[in-house]
Image (cartoon, rainbow, N blue to C red; front, side, top):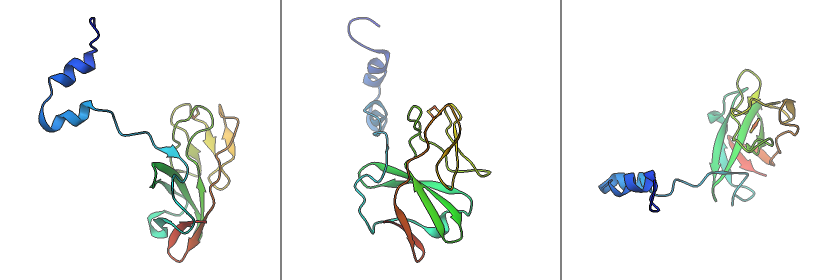
Length: 137
Ligand code: FES
């Protein structure tokens, strides 16, 4: 479009009321890691993590952590940001963590890369299991 208007700005100008928020800036992208979480902060209930599976968990300060339950009482945590180009990887299914963008795969027990294009594994984040909760270590 000409004269400095984008198609988006014109469309947004036509929107009124509650729909206006859809035209503003979108929610900030989560940053892989603990954000402002501190040691002892609860990240999840153990019961919310299926054995052999996991979950992406939001943390204070716009962070996000991938929790993986590797055994009844064992959980590992990783920065879910793919080392290849920064996509958020998915919780494990069928014994593998997969990046949805270019399909790199990672070992859910260690975070090590199994198949590229990523040449690096996921960065582990220190957590512990305390009773029925997963907490920042
Ligand atoms: S961004 Fe994950 S494999 Fe490319």
